[in-house]
Length: 309
Picture 1 (cartoon, rainbow, N blue to C red):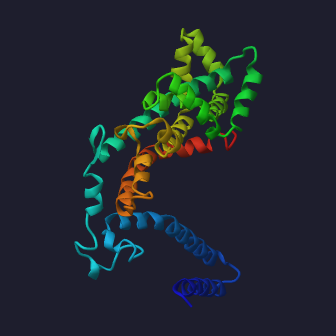
Picture 2: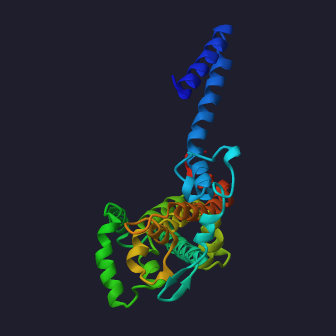
Picture 3: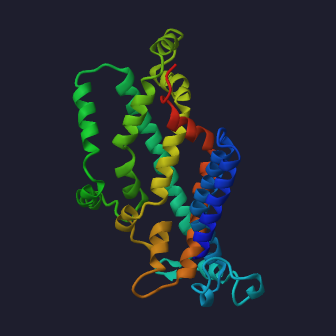
């Protein structure tokens, strides 16, 4: 029997002892089993992150020798060092000159932030209009919008790319950002959230002299802040991890984003896994910071509308 089988056998044995001590009140036994299960699931979830941290600091010569960190007795400059990060930040020669890794980080940050802000503005405004205004063709427009969600986005890349070529926006951030500043999914989310905003409060604002923009920004948007935070986080993560779009619309090396650059470290001609994993470790830091900053609003946005009353 291996270590995992022995561990499972020990867990079941302890559960059997606790259950046998009080069969009429098995609360303690099942509570123990629940905690062991939660801890086991947490370990399984966190294990890949621990492996990534260990691999980023291991030398290329021992990268595949140990699953996680090597034993403390084996730690030395030949096994654990910052060589992967040194090569990552050393810079690479390109047509535009030497390009450093931090440039790719800033590129990804700019593209993801600009896209998130623009989607938040346009999707929330469209959702507000569909939820709070009555106009001719509103229902067919909503059905058409929801129907477009059934079309895979990859199918639209060819006509969109042709359009960007005609507009001379290829290899520009405008050509990358403009096609995705509005999403049907975001409009639908804000439409559902805006429907919960009381019409009486909006009418009271209009009576007090608020313009329609003031009603939208000052009255409606603060009430859907949890949904806005959840939408911003999901949009930012999607744009931060986007690979297909930047690899098609961007051509200059100094304009590439992190997913495209990290993929260049692993190809037919180059297999620098240590540098790739070090870059991946750095790439997950900004989304993690954003998630922890918006954690409460994110959870509130996901659970909004789940309980009535």
